[in-house]
Every structure is written in C-alpha cells, then in structure tokens.
Image (cartoon, rainbow, N blue to C red; front, side, top):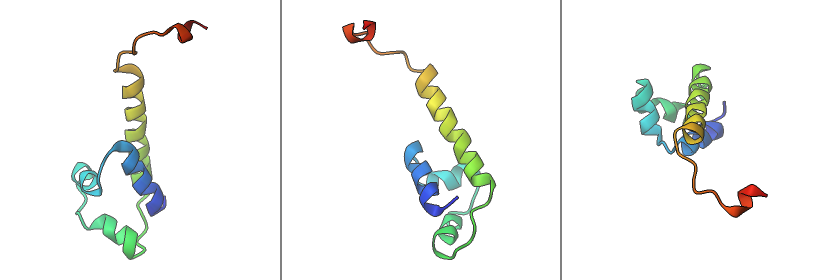
Length: 75
C-alpha cells in the first residue's frame, strides 16, 4: 500500500489519520514515518482498511432504508 492509497482509504471512510491511530492503537507519529521517512506500511494496514471499507459499503447497502420509489424505477 502506498501512502496515497492509505490517504484515499481514510478519505473514503471519512476518517483523519488521528482517527485511524486511535482505532488501531498506533502512536500518532507512526503514519508520519510512513509518509516522510519511507518506513513501509505494515501488511495488516491495507487489510484492516479493506475490512472497514467493506463494512461501510455493507452499512450503506443494508442498514439504510431505500429512498422513495420513483416512476423511473419501474421502467
């Protein structure tokens, strides 16, 4: 995972880097090392973010009632 992919995943979740650090127990400076010092992003990070993104998609698909039906839906 690149830092750009990491940032894009956080944006898709509506999270800030600090939110990710709090949720995962990482020190708040850890992502800075990934960004500026070339420290590799651990393999578990993209896996964790993929799970969170899947959960967000499922929540949108199954936990939100559908909107009003329009005439265009019948066509």
